[in-house]
Image (cartoon, rainbow, N blue to C red):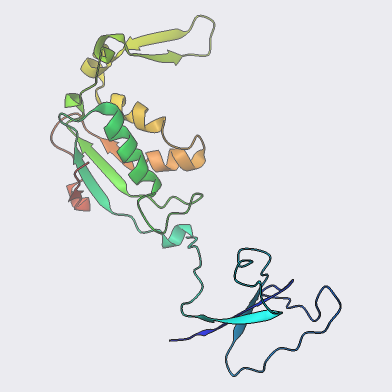
Length: 205
């Protein structure tokens, strides 16, 4: 189905078709019973418009418009992920990808359009190399000498859910939007969670 015709004219555009050529000669356009659009052949269509003053090319599909969601239009789904045996960095990057909404065709960078993620068995997540003994987490009280260092091994014993939270937090935007996305991320150290009322879907990452 032909929706219209594409008219490429020297110096033309969608909104302001030229009335005369660069040499000053007036253009006369054909009277067509269907719409046609103007493009400058010196741009992306230069190779097609090397003969004559203008040419016609059928438009077979509608023009694509990049979607830009509003926050009211964002559709969120609850997912539950089992972290047992998963590698920390790889799992964190995939979760951050989902929280941002980059897996959706309607992804909008400035809108919280990602999904809600629940992680269970966070205490059983694995790390590669010597990170279990060498990786440290730092916290500063903002007072002189207020630096506190916690090894990953100690963090796993006291607060195992913080290991994955800190990893995902570092992969999200450092802004209010990133903080809002992180609020949609729930981590539980055991195999049970208290969000069954949300009816989360099982997700394999």
